[in-house]
Image 1 (tube, rainbow, N blue to C red):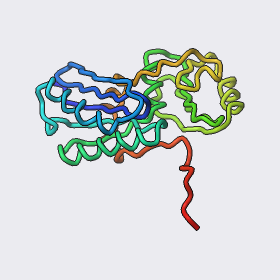
Image 2 (image 1 turned 30 degrees about the horizontal axis):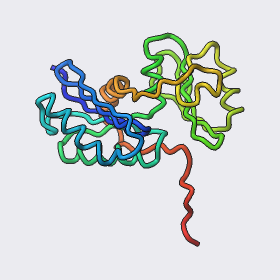
Image 3 (image 1 turned 30 degrees about the vertical axis):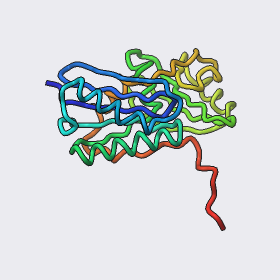
Length: 207
């Protein structure tokens, strides 16, 4: 029997959860824009009830760590860590770009260029070569991102910044199946999840 794994995605306008148990996957996702903190707990509870299991049956809780919404990432990560503490499960962080690369290019032998539009002309991207699930995170302006894409032979491009660098229109739905796969594959000694921010906070400490 597949051990129960729960995943959470709140880094964008969607509030989404998925549960893999007994070789079955249950999902619940709503495009709510805001209000993740209010919707997340009821969604998780409903999913557990539907599956007929308790939170203490979970072995791992995966959470999308971004980059994405500052507030959304914090909501999801805080919830995942709190539920892990209460249930005894392991909380695992999965970055948005590895999840997108797994979802959109995991079954191909093409290099995947996953790019996030951080706004204000800034972008974050990673290059995943065939068989890779982890890659370094790069930051820069649009010209730097375009130059990085130009160096790759026929890459598969995904992410909210895909169109800006000549890629296809982005599928913004949460990559729940990829989050489940990466959460299951994470090493046993994975550190607790922490947010990946697109940029440092604008607010500065008072002098």
